Length: 163
View: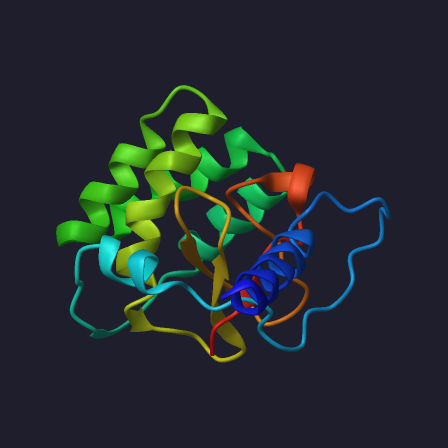
């Protein structure tokens, strides 16, 4: 039992150490997932059916802007996404765009991302996962260096690609 607990704590420490704020200003590429969503994180989000509709680039513009801590650019992209979309995606994009501060926008971005991650993704885009934001959070971004929209520049590379 002690060996199991020791192994668990070592693994947990290594996982969270990968999401600690980076000392270097140069981001390093992420090539393989370092953490998978826990069973609790996977079941906590409501099940959203897959859509064969391709995700709008406006969503990715918002995610990129959040990763750069640019509230106004993120809000503008989400306002455009709401105008171009219908249904649940439109409702969630409008809710996020109508927030008054970046922390609230990031929180509203999480349910929007749950819908977005179930849509057909453009070429070279993938689903990324951050185990540290609100019990684990997904988003879609270009398959390059992780740019975490939930923590922005404070923890820019926290996360990994799921697919």
